[in-house]
Length: 212
Image 1 (cartoon, rainbow, N blue to C red):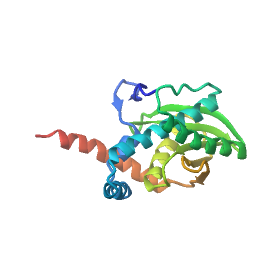
Image 2 (cartoon, rainbow, N blue to C red):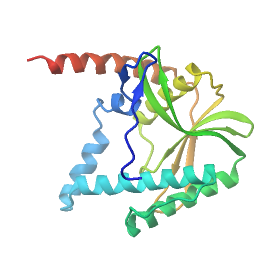
Image 3 (spheres, rainbow, N blue to C red):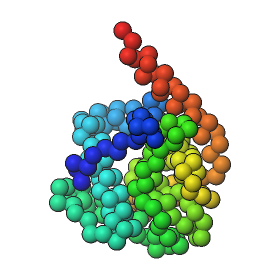
Image 4 (tube, rainbow, N blue to C red):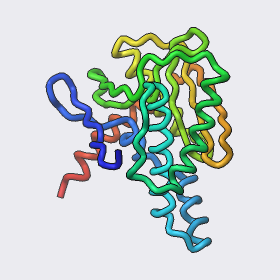
C-alpha cells in the first residue's frame, strides 16, 4: 500500500488535471504554521511528525475501505506503532457505522470535472438514513476551513458525474481516543464559489511561476 500510485486525473481528451487537495494547497494555513512552531519549541522535527500522522491516516482510511468492501487488510508494510494508532481511529469508524444507518454505494471513487477541470477521490458515497450522502473521513486533530472547500469540490464532482446527493458529512475519527464526531454541512455555496476561484488562481500560478 505504501507503493500505491498517486491518482492521476485526466479529462476525456487525455489532459491531466490536478486534484482538489492540490489546488486547495495554495492557501495559507496559519494553524499548520503554529503547529510546526510548537513542535520546534519541543525539539521535534515537524516533518517526521507530519509523515507519521499521514501514515496513520492512510492506514485508518484503508481499514475503513476494507470494512466497507468486506476485504481483509494487508498492513505488513507498516510499523506496529502506526497500526495501533490507526486501529484506534478505525474503532471510531466502526462505532459511527454502528450508530448510523449506512449503506455504502462507492468508496475511494475517483472522479473528474470536465467543466471545471479538476479531479478528486471520494472517500465514501453512501445512503445515510436513507439519503444519498457524501462522507469524507478525517483523522486530523480538528475541523479546519479548507475541509469545507474540499467537500464542496467533491460535492460538485458527484453531481456533475450523475450521482444524486442530499447530505454532506465531515467525519473525524480520533486516533487518540477512538471516538468520532461529525458535522453535517449544509449549503456550501460560498465554499464552492471560493474553490472555483482557486482553480483559476492555481492555473495562473502555474503560468506565472514558469516564466523566467
